[in-house]
Structure formats: C-alpha cells, structure tokens
Image 1 (spheres, rainbow, N blue to C red):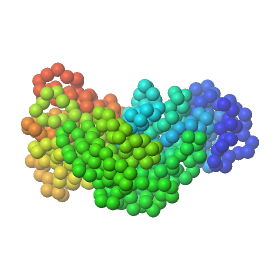
Image 2: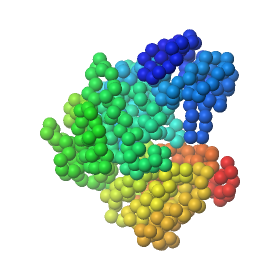
Image 3: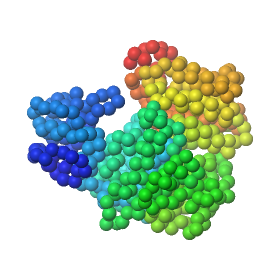
Image 4: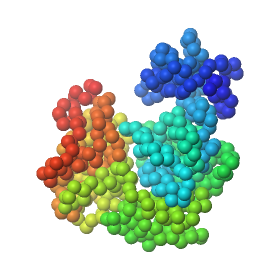
Length: 523
C-alpha cells in the first residue's frame, strides 16, 4: 500500500504533501521492523519510540510516523499530533477498515469481561453465525486459536486490526471484542466501529493509571460514545448499549451518558432483563431470565452470583442487539464449559476442592470468595497477592475483603516487579489485621507463590475450598524487570501432586524460591 493511501480516510490533521512510499506492514517495535514497514514511534510509560527510529530504519522501515519535531532521516518522517492515537486509524486503513465489514460487539468492565465475551461468542456460534473473538486470553478466528500474550490487556491497535482483517478473510461476519480501560485510554480500539457495547461493572481498579474512579469510568465510557461515530454498515448496526442495572455507580452515570439505544439487565427489581429464581450448586447455576418480550430458564456450568450477571449481559446483548431467539441464546449460554483460569477446578483426586481464578481486584476477590461459599458448607481458604507498581490501595482493600469473607488466607507474591515483596505483604497484612485477622491463626505470609499454594493445601480439610486468586490464565510473573514463566494451574497441579504423593508436573521456578529479593530488585 502507498503511504498516501493510509491517510485517505484519516480523521486528524496531517501534512498535505505526503511522500509516495510503499508500505508493506506496520510496526511499533523497532526490533521487529521488516523491510517496507511503517514504523510508528510512540511515547510510553518507560520508553520513547522516537529514540529507536534509526534502529527501525536500519531494519528496513520505509517511512516513520511520530509526534516529535524531528528531521534528518533517510526515509520520510511524518509528524502528527499524537502518534498513538493515529496508529489505530493507520492500521485500520492498511487492512481496509475490516470492522466496517463485521458486526462488532464490544465488552468492557472491571471484572467479568472475558467471561461475558466468551458467553456472547458461544451464543453467536449456537445461532449459526460465523463469529470470532478477541479477548485478553486469546483470539479465535474460525478453528484457529491465537494466544494474545503473557501479561495482556487489549492487544495493540495494529494487532487488533490484523486480527479483524483475518476474520474478514476467513468469511466471518461477527466478532466479540473485549476492551479494557487501557485499550480505550490509549486509543487501541478507536477504529473498531462498534455496533453493540456491553458493560459488566466498573469498580475499583487501575486508579494508579487513570488517577481516580471518574477518569477510569470515563475511559470505559468511550466504548459507548464510539457507537455514535460507527459508520452505517450494509448489514446494519443497532448502536445498542447494554448496561448493568445492579452496578449503580456505573449505571446511573452511563444511563445518562449514553446517547444511543440502550437496554439494561440485572438481578434487581426494575431491570429490563431480570434474573429470577436463581439456584446455585457446585456444578453451576440456574435462573430464569425474564423481560417484557420473553421468559426463559437458563443454566450454566459457571458458578456464583456474578456469573448470573455475566449470563444476563450476554443474553441481553444477543437477543436485543442481534435478534437471536431467546431459546437459542439460552442454549449458547449452557454450551460454555468454562474459561481458562476463571474459577477453574484442578482435581487430582483430593478430598477438597482446588480452584484457580483470575480475581485480582477487590470486587473480583469478593465475588470469587462469595462463589466459593455457594460451593461448600466447609471452609474457604484464599491464596493471593497484589501487584507491584500498581494501585497500592488495592492491597489493603483485598486483604480486608479476605479477612471478612475467607476463613483462612495465605498472602503471597503477584508480580512484585521492582517493589519490595516484603513491603507489599506488610501492607496487606495491615489490611488483614484491621478487619480482625490474626497472623499465624487466620492468615499467613508466604512470599514464594509455589510454597504459598503448598501451604494452603496443607491447611485444607475434607470438603474445604482452596482458591488461588490473581493469576488465572496468565503465563508469567514479573520479578524485578524479568518475566518468569508461571502458570497458576501448573503450580496447583505440582503442589497437589506433592501433597498426594503422586506424579505431577514440576513447580515452576520463581526467584522468590531463592529468597534473595535484593537480586531481583536490581534486575
């Protein structure tokens, strides 16, 4: 593609006299630039891509886009007002604006995004639609499943557009796209032309990144304002907002904010789509979804009240947004077996329940522990940590939640990064004590996560539930500035194998096993 063609439908100001350079791809990392690529230099939290422009040119970049006033390069340099914002539109143009050829359902929220995205995807498939999905776990394109990374949020803009283009090429007609506050604040999904927008909830998270709840909420609200700028599509676009009636803090704001069609769901009286007659069991949930237009009994293999809410969101989006028959939608909900790292049971024959969950926010930990309560009348044992270089207030809040809802708690590592792990655990222990926790009796500190899981298993008695929270599906953990391969599910299996005296996988390595914190802090 010619460089000029990337700017034909560009929504921002740009130089009028663009050079005629051939563009074969788009890259944002100078190390992966291939001959003919357009290199987009962006400023981030720790790095400035403008410093690596010469590296990109050495690797074959045929042109460069940036937002600093620079010159003297051997290839064309185009200065724009904001390179990061421009990237999403340049990538969309390079791939022929694939979202305009798809019906795009966006899902956002603090907790439950991945589950709700998967539920919607299953409903689409059950309805016979050719659907794909992009989530923080993977991208599903027909029969192909692509891992989206180790520590992931919404993929970068050029990757999102590449996935969408592949879906169009594969003949898909619908896509479910999980979107995060980071994705919206960094404009990664601005050119995705959303037709339906779904919110799960907006609770305490990423306060360090956004500077407060209002800014965080505003970032997520961009999904709903984007419905207004979606172009009319040949297949139609409903421009429907799907809101959580029960999450009052977000609902009251979004209900006033949304300017397009809207419908809500919830367990509270007055919801447009209401969940009633809910029953819980260790094997799943069952409820009746009712509205002025339908009444259906729905079952799911997922557990906990929060998953009733996720199911209602998926039903509402597909029935009212896409006109899918309610009975078909209910079958799609029931078809989801589970999601990697979301209340995932690890069973190796032990006489208690071991679960790995992604709960890494105060609200997610709360609902996971509450879900555990619905699965047993015995004790709930929680294992979790809180990340370094992230919202510090979460440490106290999550510890307080565990002190109130778990019987026993083991505090441990979760991506300490360059912070002191002992210091993080000190803050969490203070939160436990503030709610009556007694160290050595109701809670313990075990810095190494593998040892913490083993310790929790030794505490477990018949019928108890051991919940290892915070990592879920993720495939690495960060100590210092290094990502170490880590999978909580593998760690749980390794710990159970040792506990039961049977063959199993080895415990993944973390530097905390060596108890030399000063070494990983130095990087």
